[in-house]
Length: 323
Image 1 (cartoon, rainbow, N blue to C red):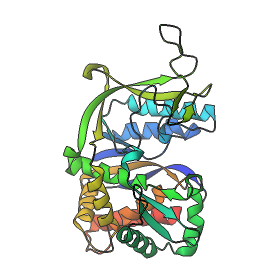
Image 2: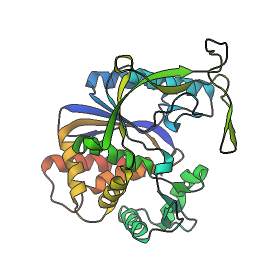
Image 3: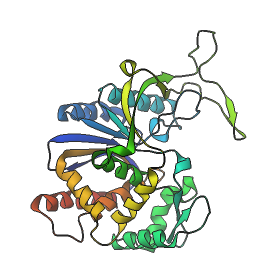
Image 4: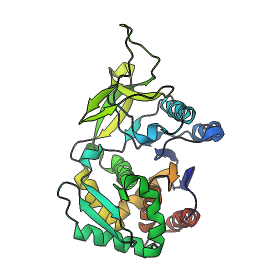
């Protein structure tokens, strides 16, 4: 396993319509201008974003919209996101609020894993077996997992596998658009120096569920406010309750046999051109790497076309670089 890092991952599909998935905060310092120019040159037509559209008064924004350790980096991350939003490309949100994610994975000290129902705290035996067999088949044994799990230390060795869920929502946006609602929002950046018409700060401390939240000085916050269609940016957001279908699809993608969902993923890559993915491998979680492994798994257990073999080779190259 290599060191945690932010990068732009690319997989070249078979189509001509290029797409972008935002699966990390945009922490790319001096490289950002070059990356943005590349995306514009590709004429990216769709953006898929792993964050929820929090409004002013919600406290911290989604983790992919901030960098909490340094104000200068944080404000650059916010600016970079605004650069993408200003491309005026419809954005599909592929995250759901944490309270809707009713399953989580625990990475244990001995290198084993469990999948738990968050509401009942009961281990889900079949899901645990499916994920464990998948990881073992992908070359992640208990000894390797002992090292990998350290990237989840900040989350107490837990994960929602949010990146995997988001990838599945991205695929569903093409084949099952009925899982999404269309909304319009006005992105707005706030900081502690900004005042409303009454001379009061927009950003205020508050207490929720017994915990106090206070804005940080010198930090920008990107929120999304309700607005009329003509005044906002077009977003598509997952419908409430849709995650049950996504969990079922995830188990199909992790299985060690051919499934209809795997075929759908391969078809997705045959429809679109370059799949660009802003990734943060091993930065606070295992999700990015596991997502690439899951995509690769869609090209196993089935006879592949020459184009599919090429895509599989690209995925194997990415895996060799991150594991």
